[in-house]
Amino acid sequence: MAVRTQTLKELDPRTIKRDFPIFTRTVHGKPLIYLDNAATSQRPQSVIDAVTRYYQSYNANVHRAVHTLSHEASVAYEDAHKKAARFVNARSWKEIVFTRNATEAINLVAYAWGLKNLQAGDEVLVTIMEHHSDIVPWFRLRELKQVAVGFLDVTDEGRLKLDELPRLLTKRTKLVGLVYASNALGTINSVAEVIEAAKRVGAVTLLDAAQAAPHIPIDVQALRCDFLAISGHKMLGPTGIGFLYGRRELLETMDPFLYGGDMISTVTTESVTFNELPWKFEAGTPNISGGIGLGVAMDYLCALGLENVYAHEQKLLEYALNKLLQIDNLEIYGPKETQDRLAVISFNLRGVHPHDVAGILDEAGIAVRSGHHCAQPLMKRLEIENTARASFYIYNSEEDVDALVDALKTAQKLFA
Amino acid sequence: MAVAADLDFIIEHYKNPQNYGHLENPDIVHEEGNPSCGDQIRIELKIDNDRITDVRFSGKGCAISQAAASILTEEIKGKTLAEVKEFDKQKMLDLLGVEISAMRMKCALLALKIVKAGAYGITEWPGEEE
Image (tube, rainbow over all chains, first blue to last red; front, side):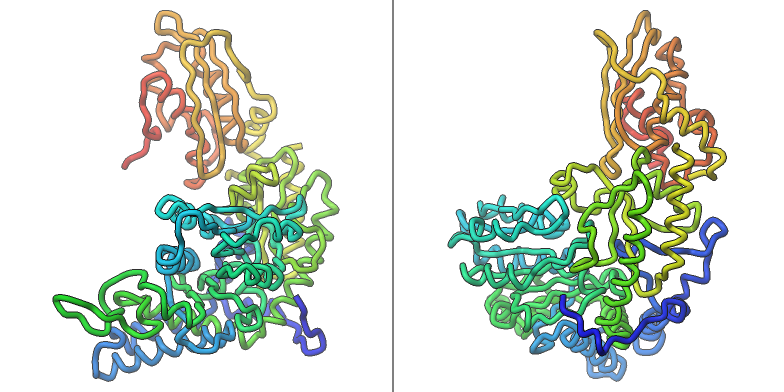
């Protein structure tokens, strides 16, 4: 990740925190310290207001009526697509399909592209670092179309073994699915390199950017990926909304995903023609309020600047890694250096089960995750069952890290 | 999880589990896990005249799941199967003696579920309404 340091603007997490009403509440009598951002982020007031305003002021269905409310709702919903296109630097907003989340976006590719284009004997290559959302849909195609699913391995430190790519990429490889940044380890992958290698064998490329998009600038034209999947809820947006970027040439030739209302152009008793992009892939009344809310979430992030978001998290990551590495009997998984790494820290305290760690931290008002982080193949590869995970975002500060470290020391004493 | 001071009893059982290990020729063996969090417990029972004459457990998981298993094995040893059948969710929670949050309920009740599933084929979570 190249970051232009000279133009960076320092973020102030205390000011940012004031935009998020959830931080006025307490947990077990303590101020909330939210370190579960890799599971879902919090939402700023502006996003909550945008959702409410739609329902209060211009609630109507989109694309189907001439009346004023419907026009306003349609414009706002389309605008959200345009914001998403700018957010990932797509050529056109027609390349943005709203979905429920990244999982649905990947399923869309698996069904609408995969069923049509994959044959028995073809191979889908993913990595052992993938979230289940970029593994299980391909297993379904393995059943339906007898395609093979291959895995690129990682090092013990949680970096992709890129030197194995030439061996794994063959003429049979038709799609390469790759997580942009790992929700379990924080690793930011060398996606450009993998995409280049995939293109050399003519494979279609899909990036799961659910964990990356909230934290680093994304440019699909520079990346030259064919598909990119994003979840709104990890980047300040509402739950139940996300999107798929798809290269227009591919989207045009794909079959629809779901069939029904809004995705058609004409329907007779004999035949149907499909709507233009992106509506061909958005059957039925969509999540209008969610889309509008996600648009405002992207406004919020763009106003901060994703470069600045990443720089802020890099500082926090360095501070947190330094502090955590000083705790005896605490093991950190994933890269130990800050380069090409998000502020997502998976760890275990020796002798304390991660669920107990999370329980004790909760008593201190600190929310962390414990479990397999929807990456069981990765856990198995690293020979661990589960971890505790602290993941940081724009409203977190060094004081939050200090509180985490204190609470971890308390847990250690308790179990000593 | 309950406040730190109440946890000593749980942690003591976690670190020094009672009846941990295996039986030779057990009459009933049952093992189950909690897929969402990876807790795993195996219970082995020796039965004589419908009475549990010996019990062992083995497994892995969080302090609450493992301590509950340890406490439960102490409690059921010497009891008849009929008595154990009456053993309910509330009794297990009373024995644990700490406040168990909704998120940790399955950890607390896993061992009891396994004993009941092994002894009577009762497969639902004890005390679960639905």
